[in-house]
Length: 464
Image (cartoon, rainbow, N blue to C red; front, top):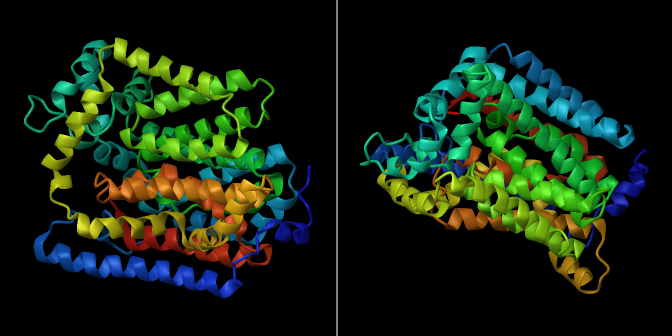
């Protein structure tokens, strides 16, 4: 199937309250100034008292301009997507387009990671920075490890776990334990796993957009999903993998709720299983419930709820019967958080410094799209109430629901720093706001989108 002609695509973009291109540019410039302000103010604070605990505020990184073996590949991928991405997204048959998005997103993540070389960019990064790999020995016997997990969360506890093992449910560490047991141990294989899984999230979001909005909207977003600035961290941390699990969970929920799937009930059950596993990968991903609820609101159905809950319960019951208490672990995590850097990092800075990090991982084009979403939200609400919602209206609700989840995370006080990786699962659902940008501006905005991750990876040595 081919997409509508470009003129039809532009007509699908809501125009009310947008005010032309200038407000988009001003919004992007404002977001850029936010990042600059966070860098300047953060450097002053860090040099003064060291309370931010990051090397290059607001990012966990150090200043180190460099080139690497991934540099040519990253430039080729970015240039190819900018020049040919919009046309390919418009004309390629649907299934090949979804596969192509996955493949090119993977190439983008690989090339950015390899700017630092194989050893530093992938193998060593996921061995030294990812404490999951260094804690595999503690899970020699999985049953006792799960039963005893909460006893090693607090800093004062005997043989306490390192921050990222203690800070996540055991599903995160178990993933790498199982990889190790099937002969895929070490940072190299961990990197392959995270990149392969993480890059599939682009296809998941694409599939969900087509079912929830329409095919034209999904096609307009496709090049931006592929060229996501968050790719800088998707190949060097487990959060890309977490994001993919959440993204496929929402995609299956959308397919079930819209009755796009041939078997909606098993599809909804699959969504529930993924949501359940997601809850045992990261506590913060409970906020994925906000965009998930938006899906149910937009489709005006509760049919998938029972099978989804059944899937979540199956996973939760399995872990609970194995001896792991999610609620007790989370309570102890909050205490552990404030025992460490979380108790030192000032919320007065990170409440807006986190948003600067969000700008970096979603890109300035997404900021411009979010401006359009906010501008059109009153008209969207009116059309929703009148039962006249368009594809663009449904997109607006989805991205604004995700933005709400991000703001809740920010205000919680449990997201101080490192949100460039922690918020990747939410960033992926903000990127579709770029579909609201006029088709005639896609290539310029793609250029702007590509510049940020290229600068980050060539000027900084990221901590993840």
